[in-house]
Length: 168
Image (cartoon, rainbow, N blue to C red; front, side, top):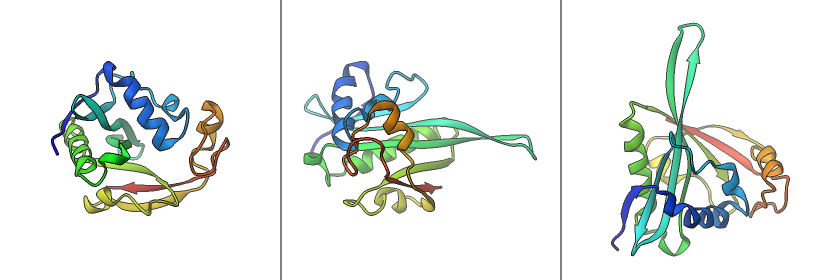
């Protein structure tokens, strides 16, 4: 199957919003700033159609003892349309996003993985050396209340889903 990975453009906005709402629940896209120029945002395209999306941001974490600041890549979201899953698109998006971070000298990463009944763990991330650090219950509660997020797992707000944090 032919597809290409390219940088997100404003013309992709509506397609990406639909992908986000489908994968994460109605209105979840509102919690993501798709216009953030600093964020890493990429899409997978097949026949001029957006079939996947990945995003991330860089946060700087300081160590007060050493006064050293370390950039951390937060891998926010990776979505592939259901009909295009298991075709290497997710892996290609994950790899391209990692390369984008590395081009900005980021070598430490964090994933906030949504633990769902239908998925066990982020297989691509584990294959890439990420390890589970902790589980955080009710991680999306505030976001779901603020944006009236209807979670596909637990329904209308508040969301009570667990976030599993993976790091590398």
